[in-house]
Image (cartoon, rainbow, N blue to C red; front, side, top):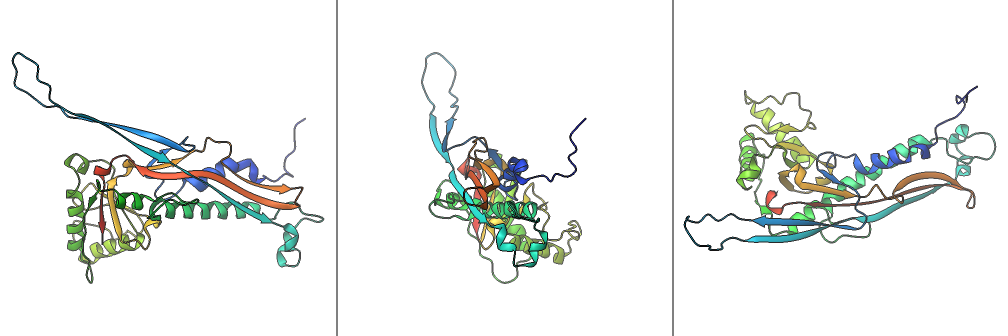
Length: 302
C-alpha cells in the first residue's frame, strides 16, 4: 500500500524557501553582482595595500615602503511585509465561485498571489539597490548610487547631452568613461556599464540609425545587454536606475548585494491564523548593498 496523493494540492508554505529566494535573489542587478550571504547585522571588510620600492643593491639595510590597512562595514536592513486576507470577504463577489463549500481557511488563488507578491518584492529591492541616495531608512539601505556619489574616491565624469545624441556621441561618452578607470581595471572581464532602460534604448536606436556596417544591432529589441563596439564593456539596463540620469561603470563583481538567508527568521509564509480567523502573509528578510573598491568605479551624470 502507498499514499494516494492525487486529491491534495500543494500548499504555498511547502515552497517558502524557494519563494524567498525568488523574491530576494532574482533581479536584473542581483543576477550580475557579487552575492554575500550570512550577514545578520554587519560584517567588516578588511583591506591591505602595500607597495614594493626597488633600491640599488649593495650592503646595508634602508627601509622604504608603506603598508596601509583599512576597513569598511557591510550592513543590512531588516524588513518585513505583513498582509491579512479574509476569505469570507469574497462571498459577495464572483470570486466566491472559486471558494470551497463551507467555511474557507485559505484563498482560492494562493499560488498566483504568492507569485505576484514575490515579483513585487523583487521590484522594490531592485529599486532600492540603486536609488536610495541619502541616508538609510528603516526599510531601505543606502543604494549603490548614493554610496558612490558620497565617496570622493570614486571617479566622476560629467557629460552634457543636448538634443539628439548620435552614435559617435555615445562612443565618445563611453570611451571617456572607460579611460577614467585605472589601467588594470579597464581590461576586467566583467566590466559593466549600468544605466536606465531609457538610456539603453537611446544608445541602441542611435547605433541602428547610424547603420554602421560593422555593428549589427538589428535584432536588439532595446532590452538585451550587449558589448559596446571597440570595448570589453557590457551595456546593461536596470530598472533600479529608472528616472536617474546616471551611468555607472565598474566590474560587476565589484558591487555587492548583502543578505542573510541563513537566518530562520528570513522566510515567506502564508497561513491560516486560528486565533484571528484570517489568512496571513508574512515575509521577512535582510538586505543591503556596497562595493569592494572605490577606485574601480566611474560614474557619469548626464
